[in-house]
Image (cartoon, rainbow, N blue to C red):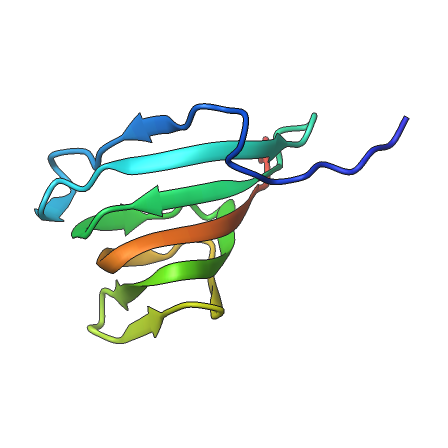
Amino acid sequence: MQSITIITEQGQSPEIDYPKPERLLEGNPRRQTWSGYDSPDGVLAAGIWCCETGAWRIAFSPEKEEFFCVMSGRVRLSNMMGEHWEVGPSEAAVIPAGFNGVFQVLEPVRKYYVIVERKTD
């Protein structure tokens, strides 16, 4: 049977983590993730993510990309060439597969996320 999944923080405890020390550039921000949906084939994940201010290096695999929409706060993404993009409330962005750069939380952020990670053999 098909059903609709509602993405919410209510009724569940978040997973809490911190950036890996070798990737950390600024602060040591606490990150909270409410996993709202994981597809049976493991390709799609969606939920809510919150984070304190700080910055760390990110390196997406060639199979992984993410769409996100900021509910509150502000983030800056910078690539290895020094280009950067800021995303704030009611704005959305896509981090492309293979992206390498820096994820910086300028103001404590709360966002919806959708991650697609295609399996390769």
